[in-house]
Amino acid sequence: MEMTAPRGLAVRISAVHMCKTQRGVRASHRSRMVNTYYWGDMAQDAALKGEFLQECTALDRAGAA
Image (cartoon, rainbow, N blue to C red):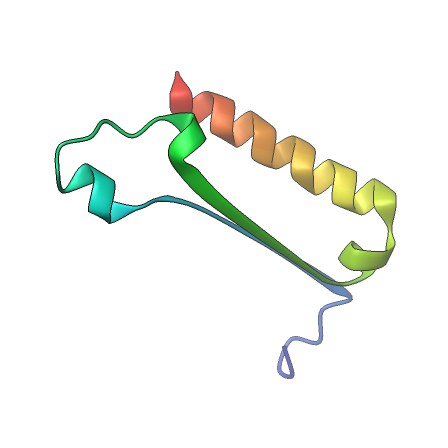
């Protein structure tokens, strides 16, 4: 962040617990853990946050297809 000095940043991590999949349990969308963090303009501007979440939703749908 010090080198690039962004005005804002958003990070979203979506993962399935390996303890389930290692035992052979099929991962479902409901078993996912999702964490999101916003910093700077992304945390303060609702329109930017909404755009980011919309893109995340589109990526989730594309991955599920």
